[in-house]
Amino acid sequence: MVRISLFILTLCFSSFVFGQVDCEDVNSNIAIGRHIQNYPIYEGIEMFTKSGLDKFYSFIQTNLVYPEAAKEDKIEGQVIITFLIDSIGVTSKHSVYQGVREDLDSEALRVAKLLKFDEPAKDYYGKPTVMCFTLPISFSLDDEKTLCKPKTNNNKGTKKLLK
Image (cartoon, rainbow, N blue to C red):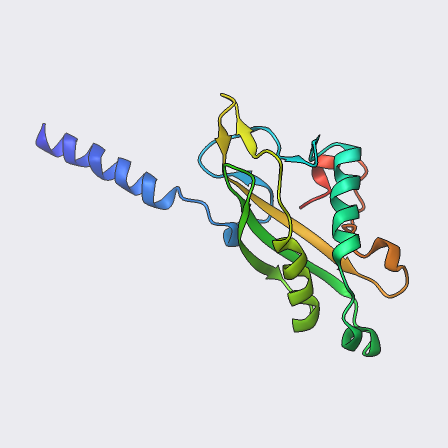
């Protein structure tokens, strides 16, 4: 009986330790601990609706400044930023998941740190939950109007835009 109790206790502890999720290990939007039922609210609109994404990317485009040195060197690319949206909608633990060059990376990181959500993601029980968010920001010299739109070939829905 003691062996069985120790075995069960060991299983519970190992699933707790190895079941933790870190933004750096993930390429997609996931909930930490619980599944997401409702995505975060940004400026009064659910994040993954067309108008919600338009407002979200409009904010990024307005605040993003293409670094002059990168323009002069004709550097383009996509910077991928990961961060957490906590249970009150505040973003934290920002990091560059995939970078292009230091000046582009730091500019994308600066703008991501400005983001604030009205409401956090919610689980199936309606409780606020922490969410890992992956944000692709594209820097393009050809069309500066699409600086922050993610590059995708997928037209099957807005939820797949942010990979």
